[in-house]
Image (cartoon, rainbow, N blue to C red; front, side, top):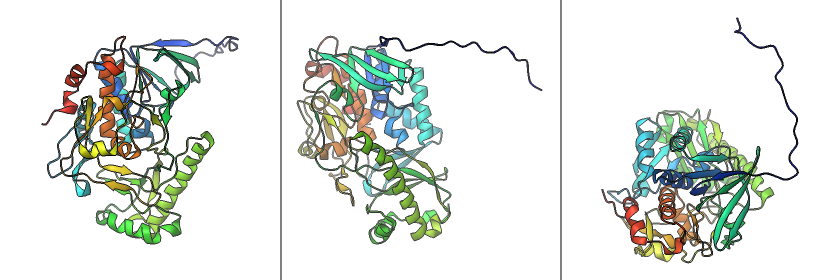
Length: 438
């Protein structure tokens, strides 16, 4: 039996877009453009510092590639060696502790990397992010596409976005470009860099319904050999990659495949089609070559195309491969890293350069600040580095550290320039990510 209801029709109204487009204005102390892991880190850290934060992303949900591309692994929080040391803290501590306690994050230690990594449930990580952002009182604009930047006297004044419900203008004192593609800097008219040769991306996906007993005998060395010998008949060209069963979840993360990641809008759409076709081919390969494990397997979810390096800022001090090899601490260090060089510059294999045990290197503030701007700071994979250096620092651990550094730098900005901050004060605030050794 149905409850009481009204039978009267619902009133409606008719309207037209005004001849003059009116912007809804959102004001904050700090605007973070891009809600991937570096942007989430920056926004939450800034909110903890008491700043009014506006977090904006073009997707209809938070998480960036960490969620929507099903990256699936949190790497780069620890040094490498027999006794790895955690070198990045901040939101990473809450994230790891809370998700591990809930059974949604799995700690992995040892193996070829000789470090600590975490496998996570991307659906639960998305909810973790949403709850934290909401609890912090962060103003959030989703599905907001950047359309214009008012930039004068070396400062961003306003940033305009298109949303399905009308245009929005954001005003803030400082801005974090955590877009991944240096979108804020590019639209502000600042110079940016692009690779002249392909840096390949991967479309990760989840496999389910594989044999839970036979999968215990899964050998990545065997799979790499099979990819080399039998992969071409399935349309596969990459000879390495990872398959990671999530114990207790009945799902397996697949990171196998390579495709070019162009910046052309139409070509970008083709990445989705090509990436999903490649994922289908990987499943056919696994079913055909390893039927004991994968005979009845199927794809549970496709991620969005995972882009590793596309466009990044031009700073006064580019981070170089030579600098991370030497591991010398610069005067303006704001984060520590230890992840190896992981350059996806050939379609067949990943180029790795492994560092000595316990080797740590640093990200300087100088490579995060565009040369021609005073109130923009980049965080994540669009900071300034050569392609080898970027391939090492673009993973999630360093991105969390860069987000924290961006928040603390803008907290000290005032009316001044990010090029002339009190470095001693900034580094004191970033102690956990620079000097903490427990």
